[in-house]
Length: 124
Image (cartoon, rainbow, N blue to C red):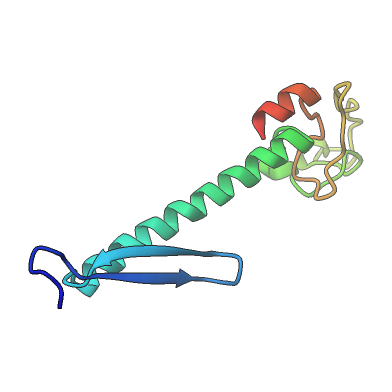
């Protein structure tokens, strides 16, 4: 028998996949709604952390993001602003600036101008 001063606890294993799971310890008297709200808050914070670390890894590897209208386009693809509506011709663009630590992004979402390796190590 459990002494009356000791609360019975429940250990919940919250599992989204084999790699994504955590344990949540709560008193057995906790209402399901309260426990669920706390678990959802923890899960959402964990997802934010995953996205933040992924963004930091991408920044360290391939530099800052391109503007949204340029993401997915290589440097040779003309942009809308390169078209002259009057003449129907495409204006020549200046070649993009590339840093000494240029590492092209295979997804074309980042500029490729990665920070120096020592700064990249600090970011990650």
